[in-house]
Image 1 (cartoon, rainbow over the protein chains, first blue to last red):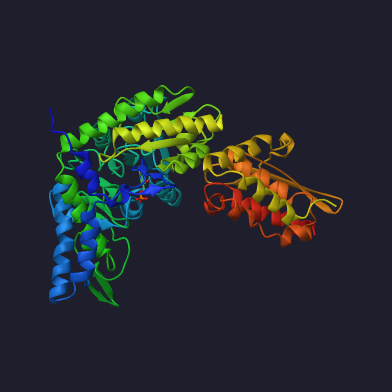
Image 2: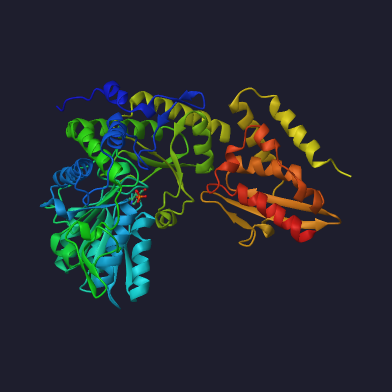
Length: 408
Length: 138
Ligand SMILES: Cc1ncc(COP(=O)(O)O)c(C=O)c1O
């Protein structure tokens, strides 16, 4: 039996949770959009700006040294977090979207040619569709789509049928942001590798909930955003296999990414700096290190148990509401519940729940192809984190019932 | 002559002033949405659609004599309630009156949030579109 989390103590670490919204206590169930930040993150930001602020890597003075060390320390923490074989395979970006675009514009541009194929899934966020469409259009390549079942499970048999030597890349998310399905990425990776395709996994929705071992999974590329892992906005991570990253041309040109510049030619810096042109988001990277320390100090099993219990409890309560249908009932899912209610537009539910101080997400969740698959204009999505409580779910369900009474 | 635009705004402010509780206000708004005169299906065309990020709004305008007459609809009932008020305020007025209108009632009845959410519903674009029609008809 895993140790139970002390939720009151944990909640005390998240200042934003303790407020009234529209004269009611805030219930924050929009964690899939962005998670809240523990105080340690704000403290790290303030400490950096108050004590260490300097530009990194180039300065020889003490502040520059301190800033560089802290910045690079986050990279080390991330290498450990992902079990990366080295720190220089961890590249800082501004977010998941930026990481995917980087891979599309470098690996994609160098390796995808006319008549080649890129496979995505029907569950993807637009961020993991559009960059591939752009490169496919430019190169005359084709996009193929792994279909999804009514429950929200990817059709792996169909993927097997799609894979062939023309496929250069398979890009799928680890976890669906719209409906919470956990995809079988280990199987997808080994199937893709068998035909020589590389795989990019969008881990935006998984890192806050599931452990990821890039070596055990034999991952080629893995991307995610700090802000969905209790860290600041404006920071993302791209992990890549060394051979792939080294072979990739640089992305943006500028300072930091060069070894030597002259007008007869420029040589590029080594990994990871080759992909980090310009002054990076130093302060937020350092604060992200504090977020990693914070979540890693929580026993992973207890965290998972709390989220699983919240999901089970909320699922059961929501199912008892007449006319409510849960969208996405995959056997493997994280603590996200998407739902629709007969005859009610999701936006109306979201507007009224906000009046009760309850924050959920409504709309297409940047996954329009999935909404089209289910013939929906959108859904309501409640997404939980370990700092959420059963009492919050009770209040959410009660207010949802009141909301529906007003609307029906 | 119908009522002046500002008289209608004052009327709405008074109606909403009767409610203390937000829930009563919204129930009234939802009720206005439900009672909105149905838009003829013939006008629910791709051309008349105003795309919000989450819900669609349809708007049709025509000139009857000197006056501009609007019909509109939405998929979402709260937006429909807002539409119903906008039509009550702006429809059946001259282009000049519509173009000069300052829609202060929205703020005063505490509903400005629905026009601040610029992308999620089509309301801001709808107000702009109503003014475009007025301009085109003037
Ligand atoms: C699965 C998935 N991919 C990509 C993104 C884009 O992340 P960001 O906006 O942080 O770049 C998100 C964020 O909503 C997501 O959930």
